[in-house]
Length: 257
Ligand SMILES: C[S@@+](CC[C@H](N)C(=O)[O-])C[C@H]1O[C@@H](n2cnc3c(N)ncnc32)[C@H](O)[C@@H]1O
Image (cartoon, rainbow, N blue to C red; front, side, top):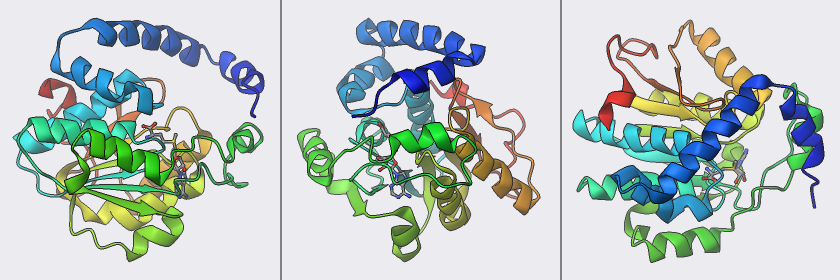
């Protein structure tokens, strides 16, 4: 079993991470007791997710945003582990009376190994095989929450599954695959399927250097300067605009609830 100390020592050198951990603890306590809709949904999925409440709130707002703005497309998550963040998106969609299809892509066997393209390879490699959520347990969660009908589970490496899966259009794309290769293949295969006006959320931009590198390099290759909205120390989101990925001026996801 992985010992948490090496990572803790590595992260503790970053004041942003320390400050964010304090905020995370406070919002967690708030969401445990608050009667507001997001907090109610948070409490349903919290045992099944590693995502912070700020990043789950980002997904909640993204799903509401595409509903309110009638952005067509499916909900897609690359990196589901035990299924909590995907369930949060599906529960939000159902609350809005929508029945968007939701796709969950994962090995369902834990994280693959990072590569030398991950600048923090030494720490990242300690996580190989971590974050396991089996297909069976995720399907059971979706069954228990009555979300199974609209859900599609795709087991395997993104590198092998994304290019052969027919998804017509995407309204919300949640990329939570941690490593350079994983994030890169998600953007290469799925970015063009995201409907203009749709939302892309990156879970690991501030946390894993390879994830950030994959995002930055992708937009650089495309000649796009995206405005990434900061959700917390790690999470970022953007609204894809018609001509590029630049966030539309005046559009703020935080205004959606
Ligand atoms: C941090 S976990 C996801 C957390 C999840 N969103 C939650 O709510 O807790 C990252 C997941 O990405 C998956 N993953 C990473 N790279 C992958 C790849 N190349 N192909 C398939 N799955 C991958 C891992 O198996 C792991 O379950």
